Image (tube, rainbow over all chains, first blue to last red; front, side, top):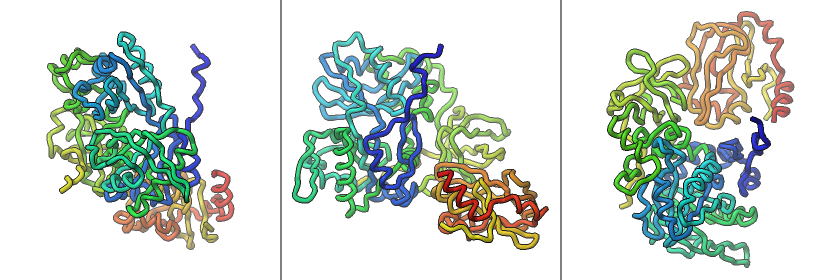
Length: 389
Length: 127
């Protein structure tokens, strides 16, 4: 039945939208948000991608959502709703996790941050903000804790790359060398212009990201003036490190090289945890959580399909949704994400195929405009950042 | 950008430069600009027929795949093999990085295409 809510929602904009436009970014719609896909002034997707691999890039990721759990039973609520074991988190620590349906499939993947003794922040995807919040609210009534949607409160900026730490350290009084990967801290962000000097106090700084590099995500107040100020300061102070603004195009190619899943592609409400290969983030030994019962059964039954990495052998680029063909020419699976990999300079893809096609070195074909183009199953992640000496 | 005045253009953003019964085809500066980094070009083989308004190949940027549409009909006589290994040449100079040369089937087909100034107007209106 048609209702008022069924009307097409207006496209949403982040607080940095005017700044992106002013910088000449190409804007696209992504999950209901108008976002920069690339900055021609920064050289475009390939240059942005490689800047993050070799130096540092900054991303507006304010379209991501934030849900806060606070109260005596916050941990119990998070444990019930998510598949990783949040009881292992020390205050100030974060973990990759997911919210599951009872079928063991994905509501969304999330990063759970333990901000205080009884306070947890879940960072969720843009396209699933409302769905996630409703799901979390409807499935946490029984717990004594407050569940708040803080999605509109923050401008979230990701500072990513081997030089991210050097750049951000110039703007904060927090000691970043003491913050390990997947830990958070709070600190002042220095905002200065000319003789004016002020601090943005108590800013949440997480050493997290979605690029396969070291990096940080900072959460600043979402008013336009503060957001623009922080963004511009990062670009100014980062000049000596060759900082570039990056759009969603580079964000996608970076996460693909690092095999980080994207909701609606590698994970969705029809794909379960085992198929997605996220076993190590799903703690079956912890107390009951939504999805667990069916996952146990699915594990006993074995996999019908599994996520593999493909590298194109012959000329051609696999794209999202293309069919994967077996040797007899019939479809055996499909590509979830495919793209040229700007740093690796290869054409790579992630695809779901039955386990018998998943062994490393298996030759498959990807159907590109009616032609089967040769590809090979390769180890993932395609890209792993070099260990620091 | 001023578009070479002796070329004709399509609303699908191809350019064609005719020389008697032969012609050279590529994509416009505007096309490469909106595509972004071009990483792959798929072109027909020498001797294949292309038909006016129908796809004859494709061009891919990091993000997207776009069909190439034949401005006119003809037979492919030459393919720019350099683009297989250096597709970025199209970003550098779309109007010299030609894609294919053809023998025209009917030179009169050229008359229905856009002039440089019409194309410029079309691009401006499209935003």
